[in-house]
Image (tube, rainbow, N blue to C red; front, side, top):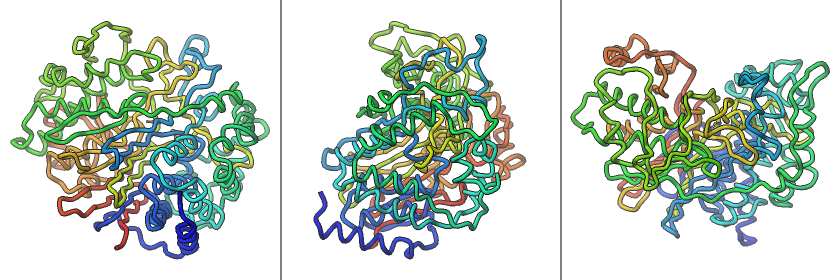
Length: 580
Ligand code: GLY
């Protein structure tokens, strides 16, 4: 626990928080703790906590809570996430799964009408898309198990930003504008994020006193203040009787107070694999991220990429991703509800068996393979007849923090779609997620909806070690493109030799076992030499908005750290290293 002197230091430094904001560097190198987030205020909050004696876990919670204020459309206490922690004292990587769960009333038919799967867009802005939020309990457990500070201390920066307010940037405005229709359906969302039905303009001063009060209640009462009592009652009412404006009808949920009270986090062993001398740690199910990335790296490791041209490396990256996604789409779901062939999917022998499919020419969509014969127990629980890629939103947020003691946090959290379900809990200042639309809508499938189940995720907080020490950490938003962003950044860094900052800034391509590969409109990819070389190998491209807004930290051989944030996408991020 913090001493009085330390507490005073935090309070003092917080007083200066709003005036010390500087231009946002996307790369910083130095000694000491480091942070990378998409929000200047969030990165500053983390640095203040580190400067005040907190560790990386304390700083990650402070940054995350601040992101809930400054980037409320991608994350917040109405959602859930996955925190990967390298604990230097334990010399161990663990993960805290605080994914949203389905309430007790859920069943496989919930997203069907007349035997047909409902449209994803129709389900998002309703009460039934809302899972029981996990973020507050996740933060509490992280602080309790690995932190040194209290909620009161770590939520203080976010409370200050929410109370004093901040100037809205173009990105905040752009996302609110995209969500005008969704927010205008719900009274409290309309009041908070729109003016006369239109998104608040960039340059407006935005305050969220309701969220400040909610954070204060959590700071005082801990997670119980969220999962029991008045806030819990308000959440249940908001999903069961959504606060719609006159004339709007939406599907309502049947969540109970027990659904909130019974919410549990999971401490999980991460997925561990190796790649060219590195130890790679990723998120286990219910996220598909750790398995898919390890599987694609195992496929790539069968080839000596050092002798290949950039185009050949990128072709192989795309085809390895395609094969990993063929299996991911078919087999991966919440392991508490379905037998996922994790051991087979991670097997190097299985990768060798599948690797010849990464031929010289892209051959289009692939069928899932047979990882079951690479399991110790080769029984086959469920083989879905199809392996479709369910629709997912390309949103969410990722932050990276390290400290002087050697602890590292890679933390991805979300409310799913931009603005989640669109429902702000009346009087509480935060949006509720639509995470349950990450379930497959058609049964039978391992990822079908069930009571208390966690929907499959793609979130991929990743920590990479070399010779027993952290080498780099990386993560990204972007729905199922999270997996390809993290994978491509690793290939850029490890195989193409780019410094982490360049690896992260490079144009992205995302192949998730579809007919076409997504590329970002902002990089003028079609027609480029890079595109032509890949087209000659059978790839077809479709342009899309930005893919991911990644953040990472590299731990350099000379003992310095380099924090790296998105230099271009999402209105740029902020990477900071503690000053000596
Ligand atoms: N909803 C995004 C994810 O969980 O991957």
